[in-house]
Every structure is written in C-alpha cells, then in structure tokens.
Amino acid sequence: MTTDANIYEGIKEAIKGLVSSLLEGVEVSGRIDSYLEFLAKFGGRLFDGMFITIEQSILAIIVAVLLAVIFGIGRLSEFFVIRALSTIYIEFFRGTSLMVQLFWIFYVLPFFGIVLEPYLAGFLAVGLNLGAYGAEVVRGAIQAVPRGQYEAALALNMSSRKRMRRIIFPQAVVIMLPAWGNLLIELLKGTALIGLISVTDLMFQSRQIYSLSYAAIETFGTVLVIYYVIARLVITPLMRLLEVKLTRNLVRG
Amino acid sequence: MFEIIGNYFTQVGERLDWNWDLVECVVLPRLFGTVYTDIGFAAGCKDPALSHEMFGALGNTLTAVFLGYSIALVVGLIFAIGQRTPSKLLSRVVRELVEFIRSTPLVVQIFFVFFVGPQFGLTLSPWVAGMTAIGLHYAAYLSEVYRGALNAVPAGQMEACVALNIPARRSFFGIIVPQALPLALPGMGNYLIGIFKDTPMLMVIGVAEMMHVATAIGSQYWRYTEVMTIVGLVFLALSIPTAIILRIFEGYIRRKMGMTR
Image (cartoon, rainbow over all chains, first blue to last red; front, side, top):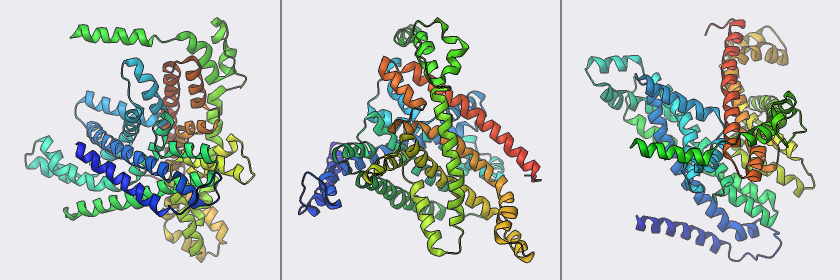
C-alpha cells in the first residue's frame, strides 16, 4: 500500500518537475504579462488541483457504480421493502440538488455523530448523487434485455440469482454503457462543487489562483480546458474502449 | 443492544434539538419572504428577521429558473439550427462549442463569465453573469434535445414541403417544428428540473437564491441543520411534483397532436 502511494506521489512529482523544467527559462515577475509566465507561476497549483479532481472522480465513480448496481437491481426486486428503499433513495437524490446534498452531508451529519473529512464527504456526496441517476440507467438497461432471455433462463431452471448474474446483467451492461459515458462526465462536473467545502480540487485552486493573480481569462479558461480534456480525451475514449471490449464477447442477434 | 441504540438516539436528539425559534423567526421568513411573515406565522417571534422581498430566497431561485430557462430555450434553438445549416464550418464550430459547454462544470463557467468581463472593462452584475452562464449551459443541453427531436421527424416531411413549394422558413416553423415539439418535451422537462437543481451554484458569485441565504443563516447562527434540511425539503417538494405535472402535460400534448405512443 505504502509503495503504491509512493509510486503515485513519484509520478505526480515527475510530471510537475517536467512541466516546471519546460518553463524554466520563463521570467516570473510580480505582474503577469504572458500566458507562459502564468503557467510557470501557477502550473504547480493547477496540477495539484487536477490530481485531487481525478482522485475524487475515481473514488466517486466507485461509489456511484456500486450504488447504481445495488439500487438499480433493488428497484426491480420482488420484495416490497427493498423496492421501496431503492425508490426512496433514487427519488431523494434525484429530487434534490447535488449542492444541497453536499452541504447537508458536510454540515448536518456531524449532528448525528458522523463527522466526515471534506475529502471523504466530497466524493461520497458526488457518488451518492450520481449513483441515483445511475440506478435508473441500470434499471432501464435490465428492463431492455429481451424478454426471451428471462424466459430461456427460467426454462433452463436457473435460480434468480444465477439468472441475473450469468444471463441478464452481462447483456444489460452492454446496453447501459453509452448512458454511463454521459453520467461519468456529469460526475466529473459534479466534483467541481467539492471545492466549496474546501477540498483543494481544481475549482478550489482556480479561485485561489484568481485571487492571487486577477487573471480571470487565463485562470478560468485553463481550468475549463483541463476539465474538457479530462472529459473528452480521457473519459469518452475509455468508455468507447470498454464498449468495444465488452461487445466483442457478446454475439448479439 | 437496544440500550446502545437508544442512547445513541438520545445523544443525537440532545445535539440536534431542532430549534423551532430559529426556523420560525429566521429561516422561513428569509426563505419565503413577506408572503410568509404577512400571514402571521412569525407573530410569536420577538425579533423576526423580516425579509423585504416579496417571495424571499425562494422567489429569487424561481426567478433564476425562469430567466435561465427562457434564455436556454431560445439560445438552444439557435444552437440546434446552427448545427443544421448547410455551412460545414459553422455547424462544426457550433457542434464543438456545444460539446465544450456540456462537458465543463457550470460553477467554473459561472466564475468565467463573472470575472472575465471586468478584465475587459465590462462589469456584469451577479444576476446578469449568472443568468448568462446558466442559460448558455442549458442551451447546450437543450440544443441536443432539439436536434434529436428534429432528426426524428421523417425526412419525407421536408421533401413534401419542397414538393409543395412551401417557403423554407414556413416549412421549418410550420411543419417540422410542430411535429418535433412533442418529441422534445420530455427532455425539455428534465432540463427544467435540472436548471432548478443547479441554481444553488449561483451562490458562488453572490446571487441571493436559497442556498446563498441558507449558508448565510448557517454561518450567522452557526446552525446548519434546520436551514439545510428545509432547503433540501423545498427542493424535493418542488421538483417531484413538477416532474409528475410535466409527465401529465406531455401525455396531454401527445394526445392533442394525435400521437398514440
């Protein structure tokens, strides 16, 4: 565990070192005259923020996917209690805004004896919120699996658990993947809010940099581009790759 | 076992002790404005924090929703038509712009619009900047809804218009759009609720909507429980019925337009 953390820290330092060496020749004066100067002065902060945003996104994705699968299947359960619980979870988190949930988890849960670090509260809130949207996607995908598949599995005398695990769910995953691509971008955008509870993510750093430099277009422009690059050049291609990988194993008739 | 659980809840209860005075005299008047105080609910308060606005913070939130959505409806249509023009360059540029707006966070966009203006000598008020940002953000989403709906209208309709020699503008607004509208309604309704749930982000530049007032009250009295819970309940109480009403409305329009499915 510690070695993994060290490797990760090492990668972070290496990237930052590379960037700062590229910008070494740039003079940094009090006033910021060029964009390169801006980068030389604040590039480190932007990278720090970017890493926190990526970490938070990954943790939130794990929470969201787990919750989505659990409650998406729970929504279709034959037991009334499980179905009701899932519906309450989904409607509650879809009905209120992410920011309210985030502030509620951060400010109100301490009264219930649950004190969460901002870092933990951040990805939990985002994961809980997007998990509710994901649960609806999962439910829709499971319902979109052709009816004949249920019947065939039933005819082969599979137990309901085996039917779900071996027959229905693998086909549902393929159906739900495109929707998840959009959801993950929503999730990335959602993590921008955790800066408001003082997690030092990209949004938080952008406010800090702005208050230090008053260079609005450089600061917020760069941050917007970073978010765009993560969304379009990391998340979208990865999801497409996953789609190709998963559909290859499934012969679809 | 039961003793431990019981103790936990008494502890929570002691810490929590819901402060009704705060709710009645500060939270509700500032969230719901003079409408609330005039009715006389706040009569028992020694010093109610009177709101001078008619509808308080909730009114501001709903105004933001109305203005932002109006901008989004119009600009979204412009974005959608921009992607259908014969000019390859224009449609490409609009497409990229929509993608960019859709995949970057609204908070950062709000900061961008609010702070970039002064750098060029154009100072925007929080309301103008906030409405521009939220309007453009949802315009990008709505343009996708419009585009999908417009593409779903069979190509034969446009061909028939050409055959009948109907002018281009009239065939678009008179023939294609009325058929696309029922298809676009579900998406449009979703984003109406979406814009409502995204208005709290306007607090970062100081628009006095519900969340802004809630954090102000929270930090003033150092009690977040009541105000955060009530704001959450207001969101729930408004968004779920709106969703149900919109669904009924969609069905009505569909029947009216003679669509069975």
